[in-house]
Image (cartoon, rainbow, N blue to C red; front, side):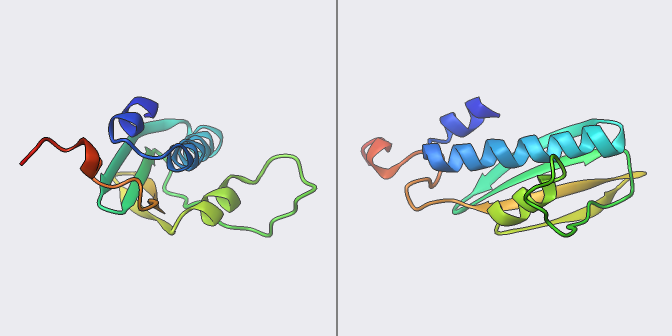
Length: 118
């Protein structure tokens, strides 16, 4: 994932947020759904979508956040960093996805100043 984000020339801040969101989605799949089955990352224009598929049909839920609690912050972190997020059924399980808004410096597969002369 880190390599794909670097290849897409996303800013360090965008890459950091994306890695954190992916880690939280993967951790939730591991802890609550028997492990992830698939991770996908895609970007188009100003949005990066991270999706994790697992074998449980039970959707994650955003509960009351308690800062003093150890653990249990994953969905809260995803909710804070993502432009939007949700779930969709996937076979007997589900896919949890999160869309992150990319900064203006992170656009397209290359930056304009990296583009070959036209």
